[in-house]
Image (cartoon, rainbow, N blue to C red; front, side, top):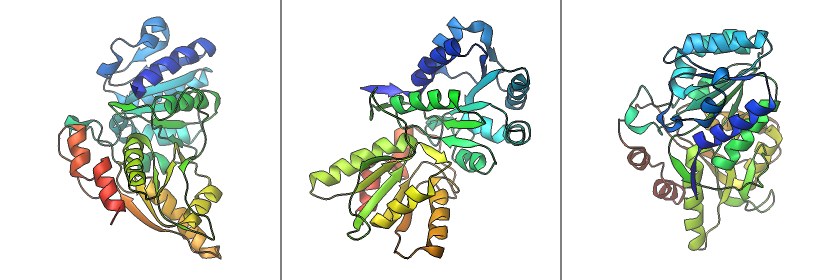
Amino acid sequence: MKNNLYKAFDDAMIRILKKHGNSMVFIGAFPKVFEPANFARFFHDRVFNFGLAEANLLAAAAGSTVCGKLPFVIGSSSFLTGKGWEQIKDMICYPNLNVKIIGFGSGLSAGQGGVGMHSTSDIALMRSIPNMKVFCPADFYQAVKVFDFIAEDFGPSYVRLFDGEVDDIFDEKYELKDVDRISECGDVLNRGEVAILSHGRLFSECLIAVKELEKNGKSCGLYNFPFIKPLDKKVVLEILAKYKKVFIVEDHGTSGLYSAIAEILAEGLGGAHMTLAVLKKIGIDEKFAESAREEDLYKKYGLNAEGILKEISC
């Protein structure tokens, strides 16, 4: 069954607004998929639409915490993390306020929105700020668990949502983990050849690619990372010790999951007594993408299942 992550947010916010009487929603650019949003209809007195005024939106959310409120901010991931970066850094993360930021249209999923809407640096911007946690759910059920988690967890959080629908990967029994080990090959002594680490929208493409490999009798490790920050260094090094080559797949530029894993790899090489994997990235680097449909962009940049399969098979 196909679902989108905005429905997950809508469903989760109804539960959160019911459970937490101090919770509020601050909206930036209102995505069409939310029209009409159930949480906005049922809790209209606790939903505030600021339109295209991200700096004011984030400042107001920060101020609401002083009055004991639990603010959820939703808007374009490109605009919130770009235009609002100073407010996020100085007004939210520096005093470590309990603000939850939800960015939609991540990566290239905004498609025809063009460069202004493409969000390929948001992870880098959020990952660079102390106190900020970063989450990238891959499907409806994982997104629901992420929203439930951040509602109970204290401190600033950024959740990266993608446009469009994908097939369900998990189900209602899913439990949120730092890393989902979908398939594993090898161990420290008997190392597997290849593994893929991914998150968000592209994880479903990686899953298709791995299943295609299995049809041909080949094995490939596959890991999902809903948590981008913080990362469990011990788990990452354990994965890197299992394989000869590890591909990081993400619709992001520099300083995303690939860079975070590379930093841990560099630290591990400094004190490890074992060989760790060679890292390769499949993503967006040093380029601005065209304005086109999401599926056409993923195909052009080799980020669909076919492109991923071709890259890891070389």
